[in-house]
Image (cartoon, rainbow, N blue to C red; front, top):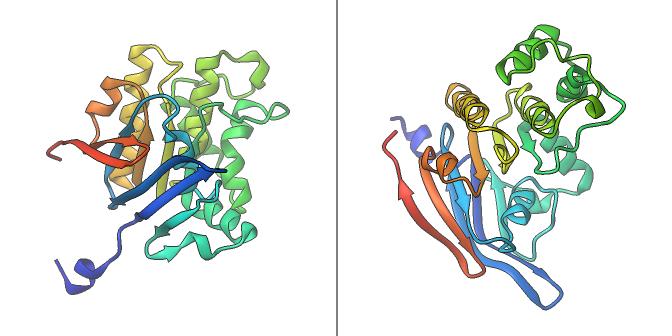
Length: 230
């Protein structure tokens, strides 16, 4: 390993992150480093702030204490427009509520991150449809798809532009076990191949067991649970 590689900052780093709503603390003292190619799963009780933490990592929510850094860059120093531009180039986000656009068909929803980057790659979009088991369904509108199919559209959309940071909120929650395994295979493969960082919030023991590290979030910080040999 070269001196430059040793000195490189983590792809994602949280330093003493804290979030409050009024006087109520959601979480505090959250420290985390995620390296390129690493998959970290975050678990915890309902209502402990796992989704909020993921939103902070993406710069979608503000935080009250600490820092969020991408390759050493402090996201807290960016204004709303700068954060949006940063997300466009660097982040793939799988929302628990999908957030697909109702007036666009499945293929158009998946292609959206590419279009925002001024790119057009129909072959890549079709490959993503196939990868998530939706081949032949690209022309269907969201209202013509099931919840599980919408979730797979959201996953394909998050992956299509090969982002450096993948954030996924319960990505297998609406999927049958076979499809869930297929989706996890895809998320992990893209993480390894593109040297991305994958942070996944989940209640699924099966999904969490595949992570390099599993961390439990509480109101007082994070507790490492397990590490897996890669």
